[in-house]
Image (cartoon, rainbow over all chains, first blue to last red; front, side, top):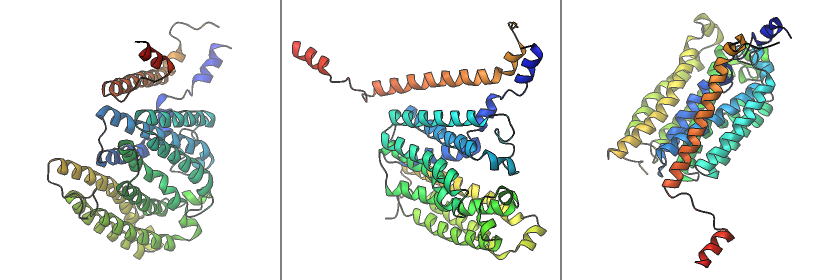
Length: 314
Length: 59
């Protein structure tokens, strides 16, 4: 081998950032934040360092499932404009490397979470990875328009895992936090599917927009948003709710329902005329919606610690 | 072919090597920290095997 051939081999060396991108860092922020809130909202406390490690391992587990998802979906990621620049379709990382990293980090995160906290939390993390990779990515995503509805459960588990890490079990409050993310996921992704017009069509992913049409998707967004609003407001009456959560839920759910009604009342001609401005606004609001609700749960914990919370109406 | 002490490859792989090194250092710190917290908080119990029983009985 000459220096020239070595240079050619190493020219496209993947950088550390390329491997880190396999872990879907933006999704990881949601995982970290919701797991952190689930952990802090739990009645039993953890040592701060153990709590930090628990959130870190949950994040690594979430990242591992992201890497396995990229390994499996490399073919459709290459077709979709939104995902074409990911490390595998862009050729920076090979599929085998992604598989290796995903499996290694999955095992590592589950075992270390079990050792650091308890095996209920570790089992929930293992199930989350399995659900996201096998149930959602391998099975539902390419076979049913309900892919987002059922697959959304994977993204909803982190607060439950955080709660289990602190308490060693599952309770009504942790199931409600799970339900909030579960119900939030469909309108969030369907709004994205409405304005990322041809991406899912090109990739042959049976999103609701492709299988049932855009008017049906708009109707579904409204129905799920109404159900979500009812759930979010009901949560204010449980022990994870409080004055901050109630205020946040009232304001944001009013805005969210207003946005869903606006989407429902529009047709494609109107949407194309303003380049999907309403749908894009709804999508951005959905991000704020989730972070604000979980932020409010956190704020209520702080208020309760200061003796200012009302800790649930029932 | 002989690699010079500072070959171009080292420059290209610097970020990868640095990242892996920092991850390994973080792993050591985490394992050490967890061990320290668990032992000092009394979460850790010595195994009660036959050796421990014999030792207790022999005294």
